[in-house]
Image 1 (tube, rainbow, N blue to C red):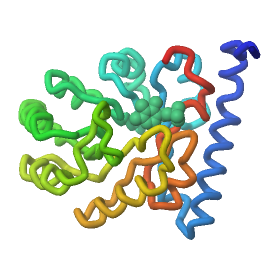
Image 2: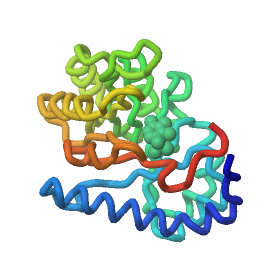
Image 3: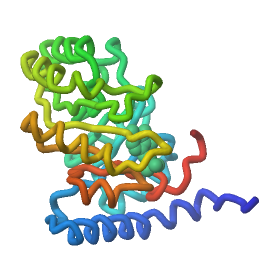
Length: 232
Ligand SMILES: *Cc1c(COP(=O)(O)O)cnc(C)c1O
């Protein structure tokens, strides 16, 4: 078994890997006849040590995805003050009792998947004066263990969230691991179009180019940027 690279080596390579991913995003945009500026790279920083975060910030990255509220607070709360252009996006499941904390830290919550959570976010918004920007997460593969609203319930949840005063910007999905992601990305794009939504968060390290070809506006890339996660 090959030894994994020492942490310092992983960190030294981050700026080069970031440039490489940005280049692949630009190529995928050109191949699809899209403006490279129409796709945002969300760097998925969950589990990454401070040195890796320092390195990617130094290389200019400002949009980050995290999947746990508490872990993200530890990583970002103190850094925020010095980074006025930082954008934090929650990409993991959110419990209703953490809605206020999530709203306080994150600029965008990508994982709205039920009315109860929409109500909790609306209540937190009333208390804080901050209007939640959300994406609705769709369980495009109808996987029982996976978060996300069922495809048949997307339109109703989008309407309900809007009625509650949330700013619904788009949709997000995580296709089943073993499946061809293409049809899932196409489905998400169709659902967004019929709801008048422009933001599509889809595509990860292994499939972001396919997602860009199908209309992704935000790709969420972790391991291809930072190296394999040490802690799962
Ligand atoms: C961890 C994670 C990613 C990044 O996955 P990679 O395969 O490492 O790029 C993207 N989206 C979500 C929701 C994640 O939890």
